[in-house]
Length: 407
Ligand code: ATP
Ligand code: MG
Image 1 (cartoon, rainbow, N blue to C red):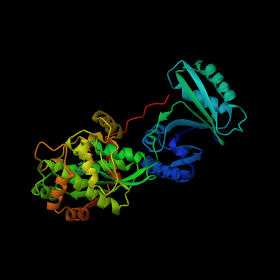
Image 2: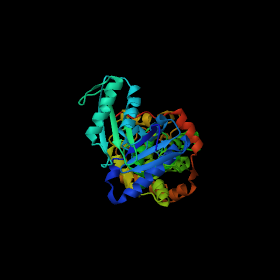
Image 3: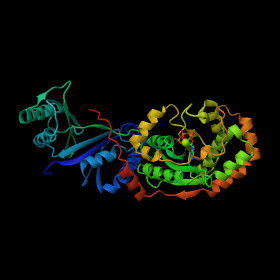
Image 4: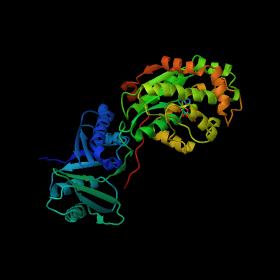
């Protein structure tokens, strides 16, 4: 028996509910990810109720809800009060919640997950409506209320809430397999990574540094970005490849206006070699059609031809402004805009070709002895595990934004 109503957060799954036979696997992955993502807030209790998790702990409810908004696989995040399974307790909880909010009219939306409850949904709604009307002086308006009160009848308790926030959606990280993300330190690739995580891919990362011809800032940025993204999955791996000498070899082989394109092809070859060792089923890049010369349709095709794994480009149809908004919401924006020296601009001669011919690229690659280069670069990649401390540091600097209310 509960005496006072307790604060909790309800997490509802969207697509997850459709997954039939795979369902237990999805639910377990979601719970594991939830626990990892909230670990620094303190221990939580997770109760499973059909398509819903009821999550509670000693941390402030708002902090817990905020954190859950970013969790892939959750479609609705609902801060709630848990109370005893009787109408009087629910009325007290309803009054407690609504008292704090501005508004003149309200509606009660009641549902029963446990159909054995003594009152039908409509009777319960009416009862709570009367209590709110009398005790708070609000008017009922079922079609266009200022405030909505959601009441869910569960097997052991009643759940009362006034706020339904849109969750991240998608699928729990880890339920779709693995991918290796080409992470540049710019704005696009971290957003691309998050989008694929949201489709259930556990991601590892590879960054190509122009060392020794560029400064190490881009590596620090990649490290911080992985730290930021790690909160969605934990144990992220970052490979750093020293790329400068290989870039020079391509330049010496006469790449000229095809320098960027031949580098991009070499990147995906090395990434595929690493990816196969990591059991990755795909590579991910932040390409967006037409954004720069290397992202024209012919050039995207020429890069794809060199990739031994499927190449996923989740930002292909995105405008830069949309990507910037997504980066801000994700908390990667502030890291991505820090100054660095991008390796891509090394040894380039302008203007870059917008239509690289595969035969020309293959000629450059033969001259540069690309097979040997790929092996050597994959072999010499350095492995990092951006740690939890980094994560805490980065997330403190860039709070995630709150999701829009579903009303
Ligand atoms: P970003 O903001 O992600 O750097 P961009 O608009 O600058 O993207 P490009 O620099 O042309 O675009 O890169 C396209 C994609 O190629 C990147 O999104 C990333 O996936 C990959 N890429 C580019 N440079 C690197 C790098 N140094 N290391 C790893 N991946 C890279
Ligand atoms: Mg870039």
